[in-house]
Image (cartoon, rainbow, N blue to C red; front, side, top):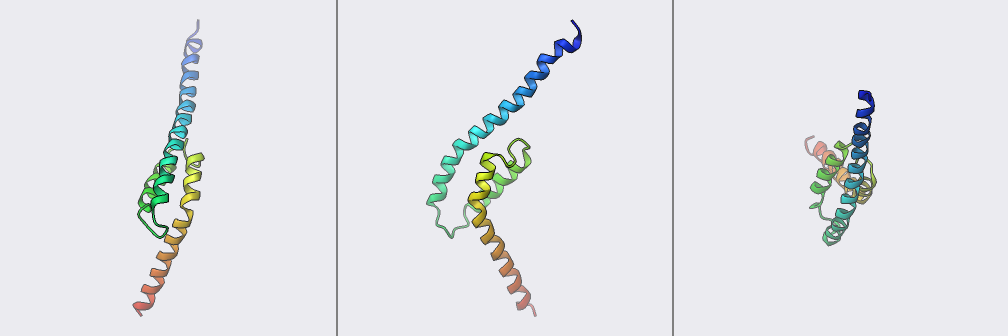
Length: 103
């Protein structure tokens, strides 16, 4: 037997392992999503308490090629987009107010 024939099952196993690990991660995040939803429902709508959590999760998910824009990441982006838009508007308003205050 040649060396390439002996190595091919290992190469296939590593390729499958990567795919299975990505699937496992998505399953884990979908289970976490239930708890995240429950925690966010308890937050007042005008609270910024969950924003650091979004930043942390988004940074992590963006750094992993298998999870970036996956099911959980897309759900997270959609779920937090109103909060992010409010944050951007607030920063913009504060920036404009500071410009006029310094004149």
